[in-house]
Length: 268
Image (cartoon, rainbow, N blue to C red):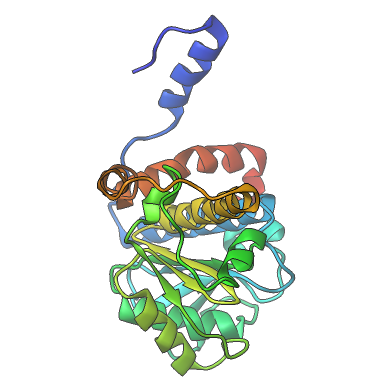
């Protein structure tokens, strides 16, 4: 798997393969699966904070409950991403009722995510935040172009919600966003930011992280010149290689290991 290189670096990479499981976990009970999803959700908030995706009270990540599939877990309204632990998460049903938890829920989180989860039974998780480069790119009202290998993860697999009518508090607006998303993994919300979905918290969070960086890369490239596009044939091939659900899940695993070791208190 690894080419020979200087001893220390080689050993570090070999050790990493012992730490990271290369296949998603399997579960004996729904309770085990629920705990797993909640742990990954709390970890994602901590990671979003480390990456600077925390703009005041804005932003939310949700995960569908494995047993009550018309319910989802979400962050408490007003709690900083860097402080969220598993025990803080809120369980909400698709009517907006808080089923479990002691905090309130962001109205925009419910309006958007409830409709996403209704429209996409395959979407176990959804992520949205007001990240700097995502909201900057969204103001252009454009899709990302295939100018890097990483951007090809979204080639022919993201959409544009080409409208902005204020903060999303109405379910009707959430339905319009879900319709724009369609069967894609991501949607750019014009003048607003990015939203990604996945069949796991891991992939939804990873798609958001790498999409934010792809926005940054294209903004930087266009600031100094005209980027060279990857040819369509190879953009499609690269999307097939790097844009799969498994690749999204796998790319999140080193981040999970990092945050678990740096901030283990999120598991409480």
